[in-house]
Each structure stands twice: as C-alpha cells, then as structure tokens.
Image (cartoon, rainbow, N blue to C red):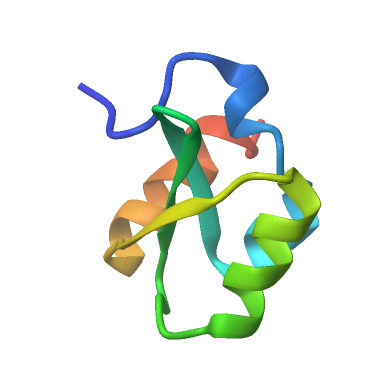
Length: 78
C-alpha cells in the first residue's frame, strides 16, 4: 500500500530536482487543495513556492525522512 496518489500526473506536478532539494511531495488532491508532504513542514518559503507554482491551496503534512526516501525510489530512481 502506498501513501501517495496513483495518478502520476499529480505526483509529477513538482519537478524531480525540486522534490529532491526541498524534500517535498505532492501526495494527492483533497477537494480543491493539494495534499503535500514535507520533511520540514515549517518551511514557509517552500509552501508558498509550491502553492504559487501549482496555483492551488495546500494541506501540508509532515513525512518522516525514510518515507520520503521510499517515495524517491518508487517514483524517480530507475
């Protein structure tokens, strides 16, 4: 079972280099908001950057680093 959306188009709203640098993942849509998981959810600059670049309001969640690493392996490492 995965914590992330099965719709790859949602997962790919953020470029790979941004995901790696900011440790931020778009998990799914929650109504008209994006559910975003961050290793550092106190990073207001990144939250604003994601909201502006996607044009969506965000629900921000904390993700443990090991789950973030699993996400990278599953979606970016080939």
